[in-house]
Length: 299
Image (cartoon, rainbow, N blue to C red):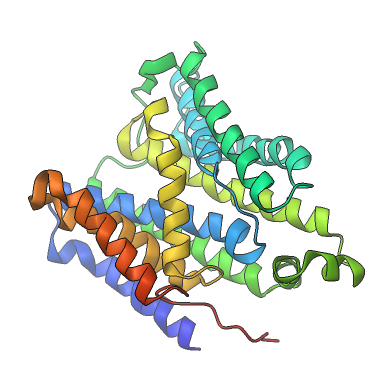
């Protein structure tokens, strides 16, 4: 019930924010923060629920953005019509990347996922169909009005966050948590850990791909420079900062990671230094996260 009220309050704040400041810059920052929330919710399924350390999550973000961009620009399709193809492609990408790597654990899994993230970026940087280093431009937006697009983004992200929370409370979500706590014990109790981990990876891939569609619609362009390791690190930072496994926590973490650098923009070259110092302070004072998940099982 507490999380339900928190979710309602957060949604109201998001809906009322444009009434406080509706400048193009503010709307752009708020839209980027909403997309970051969706990415964090997707990575939370992989890292927070299932305990799989993924350092290349931005690969699915790139796959979704490039798939929608290529289909929209080369076949003159509205961006909404590319969503089914994005879901299919990200599911396939999740299987292709996850199937050979999810038998690994801990540090080995992290290194391999980092490698796959870089492979996707380098591939996009060298293919003609993706525009090479220049990327893809002229991607049609979902809605021309920035304020309306912001509300569309908030609606999509809210459904994604709600879906992530529902998955966490489902039977599959409990299996993910069992794998996270002790994979060997879960296997001994009859949980098919490989399938469960692959399901988490595919679900996270779909969330990341749909966030990529929103990203392409916001900027009307995508390029390899947007999908570096730093982007994956920031999303992972949002999950850890907010509280791994906590839906409310990752929402707060993603908003902090997105908004804090903009608040510190007046400090010019020192803003990222202070940003890093504040993050270190947060982690020292709240190592469990800003809004940690409850430890006990809820039926």
